Structures are given as structure tokens and as C-alpha cells.
Length: 292
Image 1 (cartoon, helix red, strand yellow):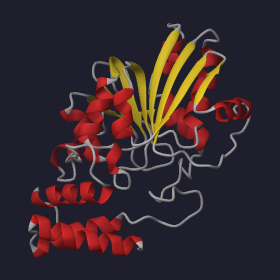
Image 2 (cartoon, rainbow, N blue to C red):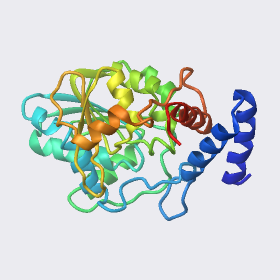
Image 3 (cartoon, rainbow, N blue to C red):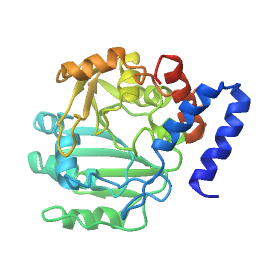
Image 4 (tube, rainbow, N blue to C red):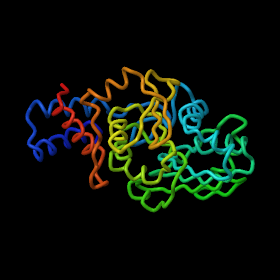
């Protein structure tokens, strides 16, 4: 069944179950179809998106949107051990670049790196020097790596389930799943609550995403939410912490977060719903809050 037919079949069933009005149905249908997967090289076969920014490239994205805002480089100068959690391992670029840069700052550092991914891609995308050698060593040793101070564990499967096996307190979380409207399973309020439980109070949650739904969920979970960098995109990325200082949101971003009907968390109470179900319920709630 094609994606479009799957969406249409789901919508008919959803409308009957929820008793949607014609206006509600048309709004949810329009919003779902806005996010149909695109076709271009290097995308995930299910979520229809590339594994890293196609404008900035993997190195600039890892350094600018994840490692820099996480404050890990500063912590590496002060501590002998750091713990990281990555949601969405993908091609492994964040792990390789982060390990290389942290060990450059502190060669004696012990890095505990836990990564969650439904199913990493079978192919590799080589990184440029000086990361290429470390990349080959790490990827060839997966799913568990012990190398030069790095201890990395890649856990595959539905992250909503596998995260529960981790009893950790991370210094930083790299939230790098596919975008919220393609991969909503990893961006719900309920899943972010599980992530929060595994983050230190002074740790940092960082992501390329500037989604109003995600930022609102973080706020409702007690995070301070700030703007990250704008590398390669018009809107800034997101930095959040429970007790650490975060860069202020830009006035326009703050206004949207407070007033837009799209600033509504994605909800997944059972941590088991499929993406179309999650998005349909989200857009229905957005409609009820005044979006047209």
C-alpha cells in the first residue's frame, strides 16, 4: 500500500472512531499530508528524511547543534568521567565527533555513551579527517565499543521500550531522532519524561529541532528552554536544562510558544501508538485550540 493510500485508509478509520466533524477531518487530513515523506537520496526508508543536515553537513551539525550547546567541552576540562545519552544514533556521526573532541580536551576522560536507535542504517557515510580513523574503529566494533576511554553501547529497538533498561544520569542528551512530524514516537511528552529521568539536573538536553510541540512538552516537564544555533536553517535549534542556564529564546520564538495552537505536546500515554495515530490526535487537538 502506498503512503498516500495508507494515510487515507487510516483517516477514514480515525474519523469513525473519534466522530470527527467534516471540518475537523479536512484539517487533520491537510496537516498529515503536509508531512508525507519526500523522495531524495540518503533518506530513511520509513521516515523519509536524511540522517543529518543536508546544508551544514555532519561535522558542523554535530559541533554546532549538539556538542557546543551541551557544555560538555567545558565539563571535560573539570571532570574525569562524563555520561551521554543519544536518542537516534543514525550513522554514528555525533558519537564519533563528540568522542574525538572530548578526548582532545582531556585525553584521560572516561566517556560513557549510550545510544538508542530503532535500526541503524546498513551503510556508512565516511567522515573527513581527523574523524575518519576513529569512525572506522567505532563502527566496526558496534554494538558495544571500548576504545581509548570511550565506552559506547548501542541499543536497538523501539526507544520507548529500550530506554527503560537504562539506569543512568547523563550529563547531556543528544535528541537526534527524525523530525517530530515524521517520527513523533520519539518526541511525545511521555517519552521526553523518560528522557528527563535519565538526565542530571544540571545536564543539558540539546536538539536540532525547534518544534513548538517539543518545546512546549519540555516546558511542561519543568525544563528551562532556550534557543541554540541557527546553522543551516532559519529557526534556531533547542537547548534545555532543569537547573542549568540556557540561552534566552528569541522574542518571536517565545511569543509562538505562548500563543500558537501548535505549541501543544504530542501525547502518547501508552508509549505504543503509531506515528499516524499520534499525529492525527495532535492535529485534532491543535484544531480544537483554534488552528484552521
